[in-house]
Image (cartoon, rainbow, N blue to C red; front, side, top):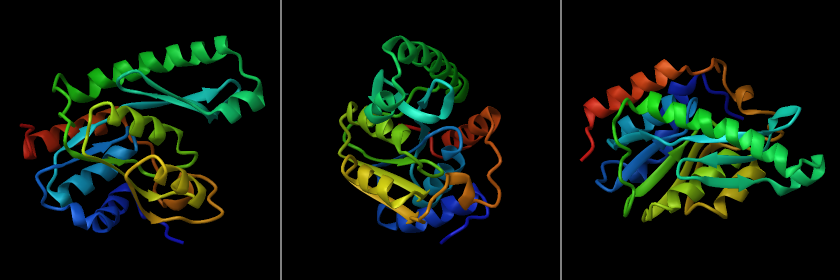
Length: 218
């Protein structure tokens, strides 16, 4: 079972696993903030592909915020985890309240991260969605569904680590799933990193600025 030193090392190893996409003009790498962006930066650099950010927010269950009852993504896409909602008897009013709060945060981050730069056009592209790992996969499922609204040629999910069952679920929704390691029992993404310090908004913004200067869109 693989333990990564940090997100940079994880990104480099993930890039190796994504080698078939290197040097192609039709590939775009999208990082899920915040922790997915440093990983995606390494992937984009190694593949010589443009990097952008794709906003997804988990909808945490009331009183158990770490447990995802769903997720929202840029473009108004909502994915619900019906088993969690039913199991905790979460009301629609509770769901609406959490969704409103997370929508506001999603919009704030969209403005903060891009600094006025428009989102990259995804139609007809091979889109590689990158995060630092998957647990339930709710956020990534929302991202896949939202990206499909932009009519890409292919959607690839790429992560350094994920539990086997979550990887299987994503394989049914994305066109391909690339994962460096699928440890079991999983126990959480942070368990598979020696350094899992929180990525800041400033770090995300700086990485996106670096990427836009290196490979300007267009």
